[in-house]
Figure 1 (cartoon, helix red, strand yellow):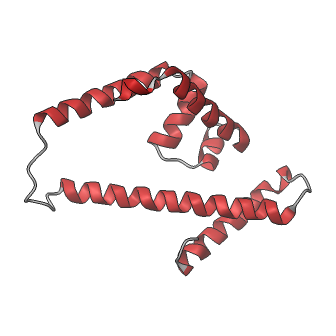
Figure 2 (cartoon, helix red, strand yellow):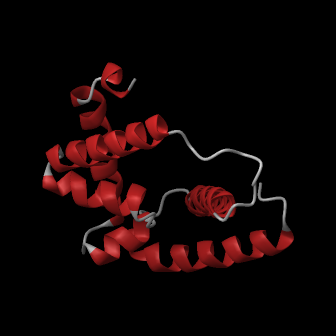
Figure 3 (cartoon, one colour):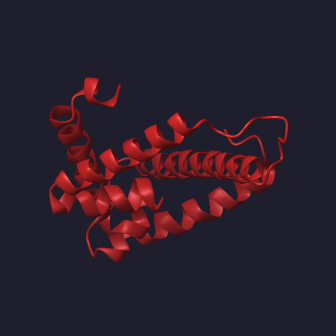
Length: 148
């Protein structure tokens, strides 16, 4: 799944630590399935984080003038990006506070479910539920045409 032995070893170690930490929540049903799910989720999280880092590095590289042939962004693009950023902040402010904290921590600060759970002193499942409910809320309240 990860296509790299070193990455697989790192993720395996993280998965084993997660399994050990989660043993009190284990319900004695399908140990192998439960462990596999944790390992797969860790691998998926790792790949997502790696992809985000690549994007950040690419953005930094472009920001440093790595492509001198390209013209600077037109003023219109800058204004549109600023307006969109302001609009996102406005929408985040409208989210219920219990959802907002989790959404900002996960999507803006790029923290893992485990980190959020520890920092906000809640169960891991609660973090998952809040993110799911926040997504449902956003889909319902924020209409797609407002983003176009």
